[in-house]
Amino acid sequence: MARMDSSTFKQQAAERALEFVRDGQVVGLGTGSTAEHAVRGLARRMREGLRVHGVPTSKATERLARELGIPLLDLNDIGSVDVTIDGADEVDPDLNLIKGAGGAHTREKLVARATRLQVIVVDSSKLVRRLGEAFPLPVEVLPFGRRLAQLGLESLGCTVELRHRDGEPFRTDNGNHVLDCRFGGIDEPEALERAIKGLPAVIESGLFAGMTDVLVIAGPDGVRLSEPPAGRSRR
Ligand code: A5P
Image (cartoon, rainbow, N blue to C red; front, side, top):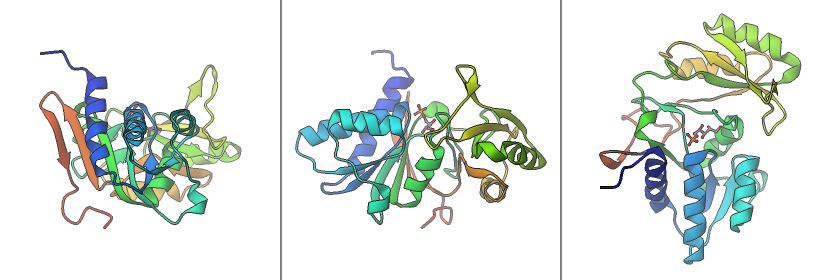
């Protein structure tokens, strides 16, 4: 049997998630390597006859979708998105997420909020018992108030590092900075998400509590679906 790696698993998860897309729908296009498989798969299905419009969650995804010929809509011109397929950096047993390794989490969360069916695609290495033990939580902040945001975040019990790229502070698609926050484990994702959102200069965190409708996991044992435990879904 061919040796399978995480890229193969990501592709398998994305292909399974595409089964949720119906003709005529508006589809949220996630960001990252797993979501990219879904965008490419969507374009392939469109060449086979599927008709959909996409709503990109980042400039990178917008570029890719345009290259692939997927017609795009602006979130401001539509009331809702039928289904979004997006990746995640960590997923806990209640299907809460950490996102934002690519710094796209603010737009990803806005599209998710407008979405009726949020499908998250991951390879099995993303599953964790508790969020934030290994992975820092990204928080997008307004550069003007970065220090205030940092002090607020530290008061919530984390250590904070300003994200850099090529020796310069990283800039998101929105022109903001990202503070990567190490909590050493997050026990109450929903409460923490709310607390962070209330801090000065914070635009958005990469915590997505209660926003997943379906999780598609691919790993050495195959592809499986998971739904949030009863009472944990946003619906
Ligand atoms: C982008 O900022 C992130 O939220 C991605 O969705 C997340 O990092 C998953 O990326 P991969 O699919 O590349 O692991």
